[in-house]
Length: 270
Ligand code: HEC
Ligand code: HEC
Image (cartoon, rainbow, N blue to C red; front, side, top):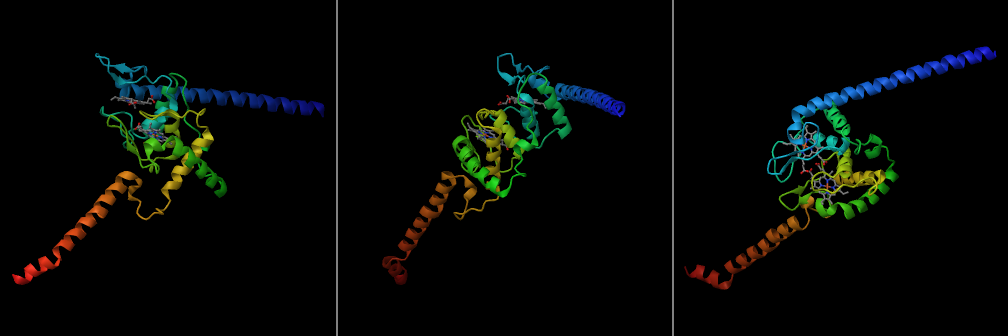
């Protein structure tokens, strides 16, 4: 009996040990392949501005053509390439998002390559940013907390409804109405361009997810005040007040002037 049990344990143990090591070897091999694929893509599409080894490039007069990517992490690449900002096509006040150039596999390879240059934030797990798994109550609580976090940290640039706004030097903070949960999370994590970054020490992963829940809730919220006017705040509201309010008053004044007794009598006499 004992011999049989010992035999079974031994074969079982040996089997798991062997299977585990081969699986691990596979994983390292595939990530090494991915890094190599990423490096090839990088040399063709990115090294012109970011350098052969991602060290950054400066022109002769000292202007930066592309910053160093050492330590920006996979999350920054996933955000920049996933929203089509990179590869950048032309210099300007701001690099806009556009339809992406690379598919998911190529983006992952580029991210793996840049991550291999130096430690930085990794691409978040779906469980970090997805709000699908929340129950209705949890979701409501998350929206309330996320709203407070958003109003304190983000409205200054992105407006209270996330409609976006102007920034100094010709830049702008984009509207957040279409951005995917993953890219919202990564934007907070990496702080693209003029946006500050909100590392996990400042805004915990749970708080980031609350912000996402809040931004998603805005998308299906009706405009309780009547016309939303694009949710842009004082600018459109002031314009509407001017055009409709003052314009209406001017119209009324003209109408009154055209219908006083004097003007009517003159017309009668003619
Ligand atoms: C025409 C030049 C150019 C090309 C080509 C280009 N980049 Fe960039 N990249 C820039 C500039 C300039 C910035 C800085 C933008 C800013 O912060 O204002 C930048 C920023 C970035 C950042 C953000 C860095 C950070 O600090 O968060 C990442 C990541 C990035 N690039 C990756 C790539 C990848 C990957 C490619 C190739 C697919 C690429 N770039 C191609 C010019 C370029
Ligand atoms: C100082 C101003 C500023 C603050 C504060 C700020 N942002 Fe941003 N944000 C920006 C700018 C500028 C961009 C555009 C960067 C770019 O195009 O690379 C941006 C881009 C983004 C994007 C990418 C949108 C898209 O669809 O491409 C998201 C998402 C985002 N911000 C979310 C947030 C959240 C959430 C907060 C608060 C926790 C926040 N931002 C705070 C200025 C700001």
